Image 1 (cartoon, rainbow, N blue to C red):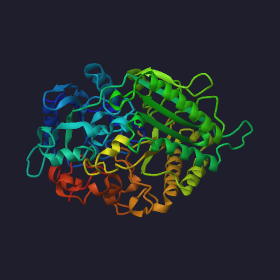
Image 2 (image 1 turned 180 degrees about the horizontal axis):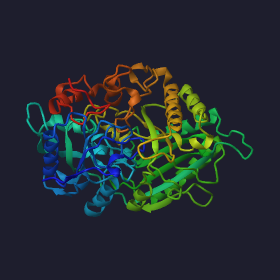
Image 3 (image 1 turned 60 degrees about the horizontal axis):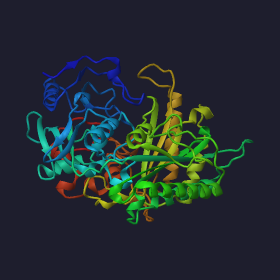
Image 4 (image 1 turned 60 degrees about the vertical axis):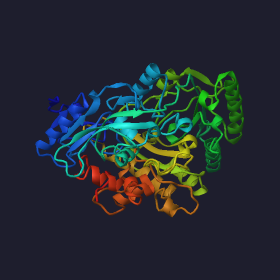
Length: 541
């Protein structure tokens, strides 16, 4: 019998203090796939309805899909802790682990790795089925690009109770396997184990460096003017374009531009490099190349604006709290070198549990003048009812993207964005001493209003969203399901509506392709009762 119990306070809250489940009645803690199946059956026998049962492992979700007033039952998969090797399907790992667990165990046990996320506590269950990407994705692709099979508890059309389907793969229920390779958690079933083949050899070293730029001088004069911001973003676009022509020696790099709010004091361009022998990148020659590269970057950026002598705040994801893990470029230090695991650990922060709101976008090309103007305006704006200091953790984070990711067809997985060079994550955080399950509504409205207004202005030309259907210049390319944003559209409402949101996440893979490459059709076949329904779960036909 699967272990279940009455919920305690900690069971009710997710990794975003905004989300809370006040109506939670029971928590199931299975330790095996068989117990997951038994737990789901028990929930059904209790009379639960779709939407009242939710699944979690790492508790990270940018919206209230799991922790909300309608949730009555939770199956917490943290107890699934298998890891090993299968002779036919490669290395496997259970969904109870998080990103850092995977990096550590795959490196130590198998001398391999996966291009996954940088937040240590994010659970593998939702992270991988949403696509999965991180510091190593330009070199190696998305996490799902290495999936060979999954074990998943499912209840397809006509089935009276859920059953465990082992090793769903490209030849065993290929439509379901395809959907799981990026179609998002909470849509098709309960994944219990992932299998991976042909995973890349783990790097030996990870190199980091950072440039920081003061918003103002000592007298309060603006240094990051709109033209300066445009030049900084153009420079980052050039960084992101490197390797997109197929030059694999440029792939083992990842850049993050932290376009922090004025309240943070500085913006930061952090970059990460690593050796990848399979791509011809290793040894002292590579380190010499990196040092020369950093010197050139320092010269170029210093001609755009004054470089700060102090490290800037590494806000957003990955979150560092301080910049100690990333050395700022100085006269004496160009790069900081770590062992692979040490470097991953030092950049592997989720930060404290705060209140937050997020939005996302893919970009195929650089920033237009209109985009830069909107960013520059809102990154200085202080909403009514809050102080400047309240905005110190608000930003637009821009990640380099593409390269190996873009070597895969847009229909090979549900992740259709296979020609973008940058991925944006808009973020704003706040905290207060409100009681558990509550928030300071004035702070919430100010921060949510601020980020929504900035986003709408940046993409005003495209209808207020990065909608490629409204983009004759082929610049924007939709949004990322693992960075959910209910403002894109939700179930049960028509403005803008769930179909709008699903298109932005999955483009033509949502509901226009053939039956085995159509997320809505596959969802309707494999989860017709819409278990784990949320505001942005894929609707059934």
